[in-house]
Length: 269
Figure 1 (cartoon, rainbow, N blue to C red):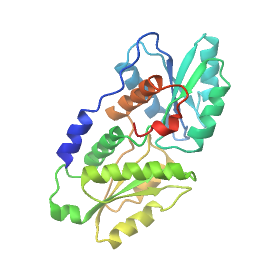
Figure 2: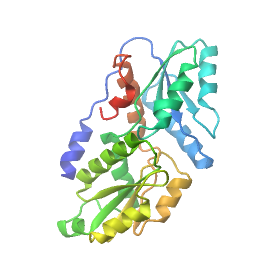
Figure 3: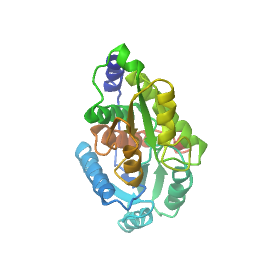
Figure 4: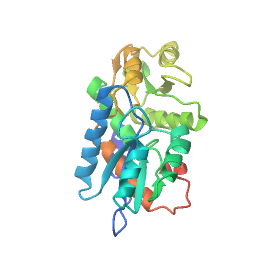
């Protein structure tokens, strides 16, 4: 199963970029008080630039960190940028994707389009599996080991039901890849919590339980979730190569999609 899934993912092709002048790419991060988050996001943007030389790549935050998104868009306006694609560095649908980012984009004079959030997508599963392997998850497991193993997919959480649907889809994709149960769990605003999910897996006879960090960068929630792990805890997605590829996929996908399409419906494409 793992070999077949890897082959399918390796064949995944990004939407080819349309010809002509490239609109600016604005990566929209949430923001964090943890300084590791900002340094991780900046390194990720450098990876994006390396993959697509010549593409204008900018950063804007929703809150907590500079540059804030309105300031980034104002600077693009001042430079005479005619068009920009905003790619949320967020892993599911929710209030930020549906309300905050579109409202900020509407204030810009440049034509802006908001891409779908990064998840769910097979490239995220590539990154999650790699982080688990780095933390000690075996590359190959026999049937007896799989019967006593499980994973908690630890996410930030949201009151928006679409966010939980998206996280659940990622959990199912990861379960198919690993061949073990994967339960989504949340640091805030949604249930179950990570400890609750661990207890649920333990009740099912799973005592080798790993925590997969479904966070784009280090921060308070990621640290709290990792500390609850009874066995191993993976690092956040960070600068795994799949992340830069996925950002560019969402950018290209948005340009290849009619402007009337709802971006939040494209997350699985």
